[in-house]
Image (cartoon, rainbow, N blue to C red):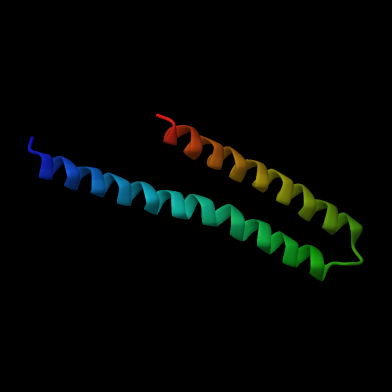
Length: 76
């Protein structure tokens, strides 16, 4: 396989990876932001705020794992 073909395949792989990562990273960020809006709306409902905080905690943990995996891949 020639060098130009390898470069094209690498570029396609990079584009696909970034597309997937863009979605995978934006989704939890949007969920976190949504939970903050909901918690703000229910300022006087401590149970609802606790539910939102729990979801924010879980989602931020997922996002942290995802970022760590991406950074670990960069070490390869």
